Length: 134
Image (cartoon, rainbow, N blue to C red):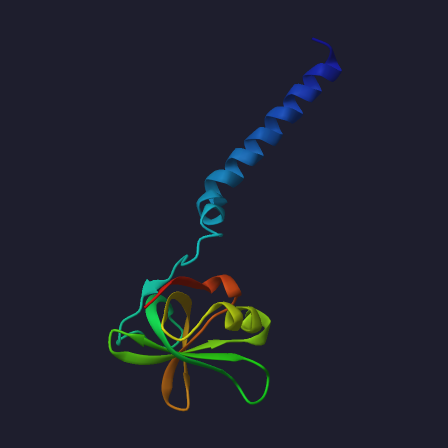
């Protein structure tokens, strides 16, 4: 083998080793990046502010906020009425068109408090999916 060929083989080996190392270190995190509820726990009444949760619930009502054009959904989750806040930047208008009162939806988001009550804030349109209707 010529010197240039040896250099190419060594460079290929180093590149493949680097890719393998990156995959072993970060592969599992990247593999789950597109999942709907990545890292979210099932919502319970004990879930705390800042916690990422997922739940399935029936839509009781929907409305837009007075300022900001954000969508507010009131949902029934195991006999607890929760608010789901969908910011305008997270596809509020598109979700408003696809979700109706009585629909069952799956929601993934972060718990926060607004005026002393728990609400779930979603980050993107894909965090709310339609499961069916009653």
